[in-house]
Length: 413
Image (cartoon, rainbow, N blue to C red; front, side):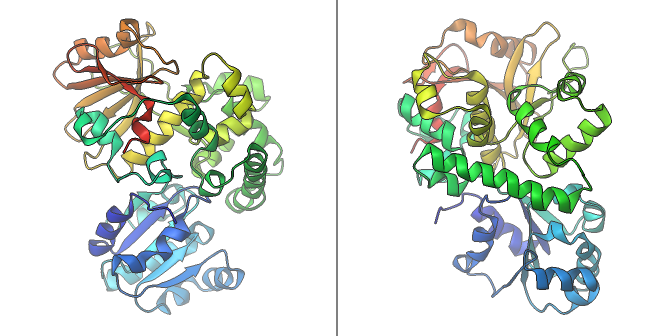
């Protein structure tokens, strides 16, 4: 079983918060994580999954009676299937605010479900469990790589040269535990096909009344070809042949199921003329490679690696580490109207920022720091570091607080 780096944060939340929610896509390991809490020396905890038809029927038929009948700490898995439970949980917590009383998991973004945010505001903490990070896959120590990049703390990591074949392996596998465990491209493809089909047949039908389910995978494939680009609903609407109202409804559903994610633009200086559009990503590089038909042979035969796939890989790793960042980091992108851009901006609670640019090549030069230098010059009071992640061998300084860092930082020990 993989050691999940978010586990200490989960233990802390259960020690002082009545309701803790572990949120994430299906098959990221939520059930495995919450059932392993015996290792945290916590009080005995009953485990119930709403994927069990009998339990689901009981929860839906009499939500208040179901919750009132639960004694002691309890874990409710896949709670998005019965949002009727949120108000009874609120009432139970208001009578008894015992820390760690309810541990909920959701395979849809529960904050977007009807009544969740309002009914449990001030009573819950929400943690994100994404697919496995590279560090978790290789059993590397639980060093937060996003924090290390933000602080420029190279002493915390021993960054090896970025081996091309190792990078390709991580790009193709992504982070879903079952995919990581499969050795062949054919078996990975079979899993991804079954995964998308299961999401359509169960979660999409549960969350939305959609007749034409064939439009959803077509849209997902279209978004895969645009991963790491600016989100343009007008262009997507024309290409997909969908009305914008329908497209936005489908897109919101895919976001709710963690199948797509958007990164908002960073803007703190009202005098700057900046692009306001978010960037869109499929948040798992393995799923992205599946949709765009990338294989070990096709990637190995290319002189370089596809930039959108590598940037998506970095996005997924950043999200996994931001989820347990001690710096309380948030993630943004930066682009001016004159097309000066920085792929990612990390910001801490003090408003300080570090810029990250992604290059798929094994070499880097001064031109690759153009956007980072611009950010450093215009936001010098809050700028901490500028980093180009590249497929090279060494950590190399490129000026004051500017660095080139191998992509192997994600699996460094």
